[in-house]
Length: 105
Length: 476
Image (cartoon, rainbow over all chains, first blue to last red; front, side, top):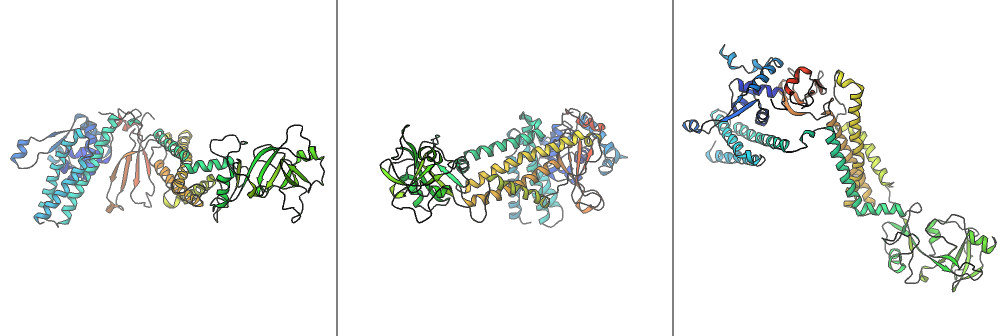
């Protein structure tokens, strides 16, 4: 993990949203209700702290659907560990944004 | 939405993103623009698909684009933190004090270089009596060598309307022989002065004749106490005698008391001549009497600032909360050492602020007004008050946002809760100490159950989040 990881409600919520399958910026905004000026800087910090990583969608897929390619985010191993601990700190987190496993049950 | 309006909005949103992209470090700008443009496309699609009024989607898209500036600043900050060797000091107490010291040094240097401040400093240097000033030419350090000439400065000052002085007198010291005295040691040191010198200096004269009995035809000679005793045997009836001073006659008009002459030079007698008899080409010194400064009597410069500082302290509760918030019970912060550390830091900030207020107000006053101007006192007072008031407000608010354990500023503000649910749930801002000591809760709206900011101390179980930090929560 990076040297200066920070945890706040926002960070935990964004991590939970990404884990729940909301993997690009606008969908995270839509899910959490946070403004763009909060979500994107938080994701930059998470990426700098190596809790999440990003990858660009393939151009061919975007072209086929006649839309611009998206930048997708996913949790790293460190991010997953951090999220697990955050869930203990914020028990309502999973209820607020149900994870994939929880949704499938 | 009509196509032209849609096009105009599209251009507006893209220009907002373009403006934000200029803040992004160059190496990341291209990818950053690509992501935000793509996201904007999805935002606009989402907004247009919703069956809503025109204004709301447009506003949402604009708000989305404005968020790009926060993101751009974040990336810029990250780059700065990577590149700057001083990044670890960011937000620390020592950096704060260092910046204040630098500000103090700058304001002090500006004040030293300001002609107005220097003139006032010179005034105090040459202030030989209260409200009197002795003028010599610049560069002449010797106080006994005459440097000003009557035709150049004295008469020019006397004839012109003076803003600063209401009376001026000229004098020079020369060696003269006196007819009634045997000179074993080569003559007297005689002051040739304008007739108003003694009145201006407010010097008393012993054995002076009553007014009206003075012979107006001859210049007056006033003896020093020493020569009166040694050369005239302490004769109390010497007043009125005529003696020859050099090549001209003068009438003895009295004796100056011991120690009354405090201007430069050792003097045996004073020859008070009418101004019309002063010879061109003579050089000497000018003594000026300062004019009182109108209705608003100005004291020393420091007293003006001191008064403004006192008023600023009294006004402070009107513009900001002076409460430091609830620190709660924690063994790490309630110890005497930690409390002293916190209060010492606040005191140090205020102690540095006060001289900054003084020098900065001098800088402002003299940048607007000339030396000795009465208005400069008003400007100094107003600027001292303003700088001190807002400086104290900053010092308090800065203190309120410093971790009580490490005194580093808390960072990463996060809005929690919704304003509409104030009475149902907590609503406000959370900030965290980046060393992992504390979490600060600041209520958005003071309520009966949460009216002040509160500190939450993070116990060692939080340390995993700050694993690489130098001073984790558990270490302090």
